[in-house]
Image: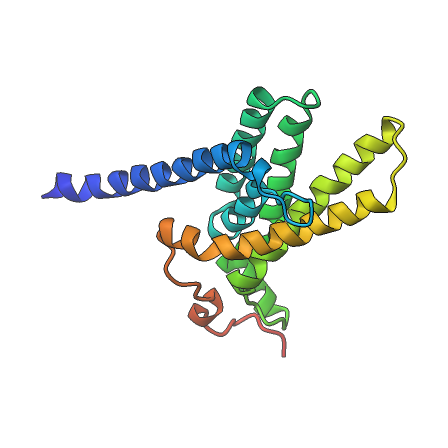
Length: 204
């Protein structure tokens, strides 16, 4: 009986890891094989960055970094464009998204409440598209900077396409949020603020 109870956390962890890597692999395949044929307003939204918005909100920062790193390696090796650009860009964007949009720890919430702040985490339905929009904006800024440094004049059409990509990717993240959270086993988006007791360090 004890062996069975000890093995359950390991089985659950292995199952969660399998689900995570299945989403990573499926995202990569759809991003490279299917998304190039889907164009809205002559722009293809980024499936990789849309899923990144969901992952950054659902999981801890380390798993978000692993998502960006794996995607960067896969796209760098299998779909090479500019040497090392994808390998650097995706992990950095993932880290920034994790730092800004991931769930706050109980210690952070308690510190905010102690400073007289609300001490709460924004709802997932708001953070997910904002995270995807932020990731896409960073991606587009880096791309435009690279194009400009290579001697291409940045025109209004380039900026308009970048803004359109930001909006479309944010909308795609909002569309994918519910099914992906269900697949990851995240049923509710309860705010941790409800579980916090009044802070004894709260300023008068």
